[in-house]
Image: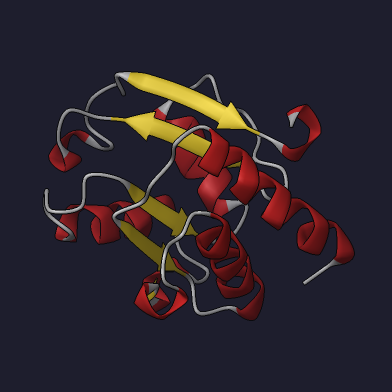
Length: 135
């Protein structure tokens, strides 16, 4: 993990904790950089690192692959956090909302949908982008 990521990931995790973010489930790419970032966020959000789910499909994935992972979860987790890679995650974020045009390192895109099946087919009820520069 690059120095910038080591610095920004805990800061962004703290910021989300301050905003009251409490994920029900964290899913990460198996890549060391993504998984390390997920672990740093988890620690700041009081989420057990051992409960992070690693999904191979989030590594070098197309936006449709990520949507497949989301849809397979069903409606059980109410708040899901995914950790993966660009440009795929930036493409997916833009596809879900044209308000998001880029995803810098350690950026967090927050989307609220009525149901998980709406992800990718309906406009989100809420869109917010958190970046290290504005924290």
